[in-house]
Amino acid sequence: MCKRATAWERCIEFHGHSCPGLAIGYRAALAAQQHLQLAFSPDEELVCVTENDACGVDAIQVLTGCSIGKGNLLYRDLGKQAFSFFNRAGGKRIRIVLKPGVFKEGVSRDEVQKMILEAPEDQLFAFSQPAELPPERARIFTSVVCAQCGESTAEHKIRLHEGKKLCLTCCPDYSRGW
Image (tube, rainbow, N blue to C red; front, side, top):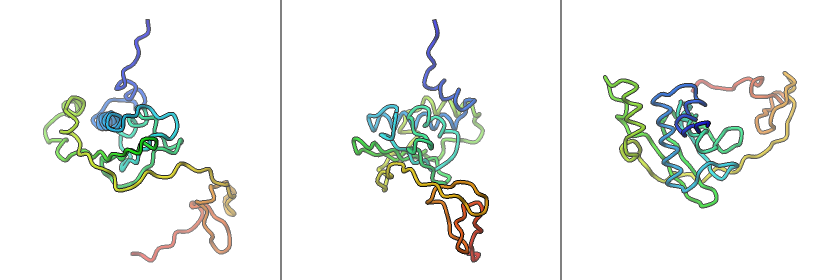
């Protein structure tokens, strides 16, 4: 008989290895599911806004069904171990932030990971209401061909430069050094 993988084992399989960062996302996803009373999201019922692109985001994808491709995983490059979750159907939302001091000097990665997996969630995370409302549902944009490289680009990512429609890769940046 085939043994069914645990949720933690599925996260490890997806991510490629176990580590404290993956454990943070695992515990954050479980906490969000409990607080919002919502499990796996087959469409956009649950939305996650992550403030980091670290290992834990992989666990959030596996456990919650939030993904960039589906449009219900949004990345804000703020460098924080923070995740805001929104239950569109119930209107509930929660922001989960890793408390300072979880990674202590002189403690092995294995010990930190074990602590993250076993500690009460209120010792790991601070919980609050996100200031933002849930982001709008994902949209499908018309494609526009870049006049320079010839590649199709979503129209909201096209820029006009000297009268030509250019993708963000081809369009020169404008900066005044501030």
